[in-house]
Length: 440
Ligand SMILES: [Zn+2]
Figure 1 (cartoon, protein in one colour):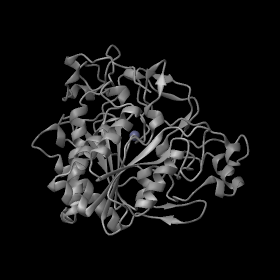
Figure 2 (cartoon, helix red, strand yellow):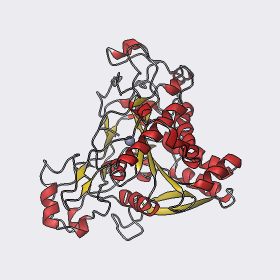
Figure 3 (cartoon, rainbow, N blue to C red):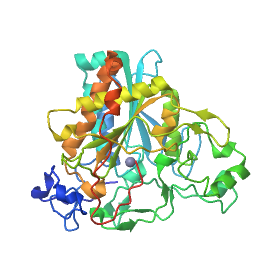
Figure 4 (cartoon, rainbow, N blue to C red):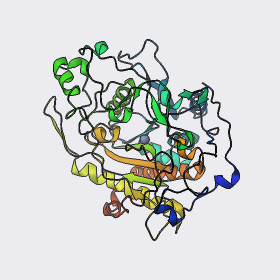
């Protein structure tokens, strides 16, 4: 699918970093503020379509002299072990492998675009893949000790969505809830993270559009019990759980109804990474009342509380050494972006959440240190504005983490640096849609 949107933001709008502190009192209406206003057009033309992404990955593999392996881990509608949600297999989910699943090496897994409208993580991932595949002394030293697997764009359907003939990336996957197909009684309620009408925030953030293709928030479809499969469960029990609002909610793990979540989890289980990083987009904040720098990224090492699986009774908890490594990874990333009093360093922690159905939450509860990276702005609110700078805020920390894992210097990072990263605050409210943010 080719993208159609070739609209360009006027230059005056394109380079805005600072936000007036008056914006904090009221939803901002300043045309230089962070939200793109209605009369402005969002440009996404520099972002890769699914086709362009595939071609780019193939070229990088071919030029990597064997360093990089490009594999298809599954499809948007099919897993490799036979679970199907549609007749057609859909779009591939790629895994880019530098090194194998050797348990004697350090291992880091990175995913991007679990929400299809969060493109910059994928663009940054491509730059990282390019750097690793082109080699050199430093890269060779890293890859000697660390295996790095990257899954760019794990929601290819949301990424490729169209609305009224235009490229219109959305948060959700494309999939219809059909309980009978998984042996549940017809009429069984859908998981709470199902978007039955296919709705998304409108371009320029002007209300909501209904694009009409149902789907799921893939980042609620994971479960700390990575082997949870509805087809293996007592169907009456699952139906009862889904039909009850006190259990069908974000306090519990998801149902692995998407082929995408199953595919990513199968890669996770094969690789058993020490560190897992998931890259998202979010809204806008300034650092504080005194410091009006616009926050480029928020980070987090913790997104899930201890969890007891309601179906098996198994208890999951983040191991204390795993938590320490997670804090060290986040702290090193924070340090890597401190460059004097610049916008790069204006980092906050992501708000405290308990989301066991997210990929990060489920994987953290399975002995992997995590880092959430939340870049500011969604495609519907920021387009490709500041994408060069925002890519740096992903690439620079990750590269430092690779080096820190390779020479073990990550162990010398003080985890309390993470604890001291400023908490999320000074959110700039959305001038048009009154905010539909539902978490990362
Ligand atoms: Zn997200």
